[in-house]
Image (cartoon, rainbow, N blue to C red):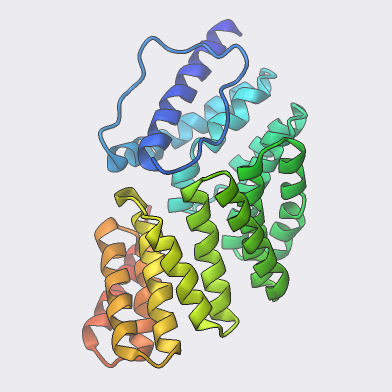
Length: 308
């Protein structure tokens, strides 16, 4: 067991370094476990691409480590090893993450850790939403903000509210979704967490666009962009630029709308964020007769469909 703890803690330290390099603006998803054994040396990652490659290559090994931790009664290590893969989960959300996240949830509940349970529910709920399992996602996510409050985790509560808002919007509960997102913006601002505030504003902007309030959508998206997404947050920039573009189209400002959507698509393409490229290019294909948009859309859609 002592040897296993050493191996697990080395894995946690390396995965933490990878997650911090892949998403430097991201809030740490936990404190280190009790009795954590800090390794003498931890791998350095040069940039986001290297960190993401490591997380992808080590996915199976990290899953085996998490299962070994759970089997040994080391629940506090099991859920951490899984949650540290969140940059890959976000990047490849439809890549069968649910079983691993269910193991993390089982571990958090076994350890009677409200903080961990809330964090895992928030990520699992979002994955289920993206998999088209909205009703299941809502049933899980409705517990997450309360658990975060009980654990004294305001940023966890904000993220939980954002993900709950997304699924409520999908289920047609737009007023409740908007209220959740607005509350998340408040919490993030109070905690001075730019990353979480941007995320909340991004979803709030999308919801105002859905509610046919393009002026409000544009204002929220611009506020988020003014917070300064970092170079590594190319996906967020692309999504915010696309919202701005769609808002301009809704306001009858087609030239500005097309320009911003094209920029959103190019930034997504340059970052290898095919999902964002597909979303922006879909709108451009519907809006203009420019044939290059259709070609680019087909290329991005093919890459997305055949991604490993």
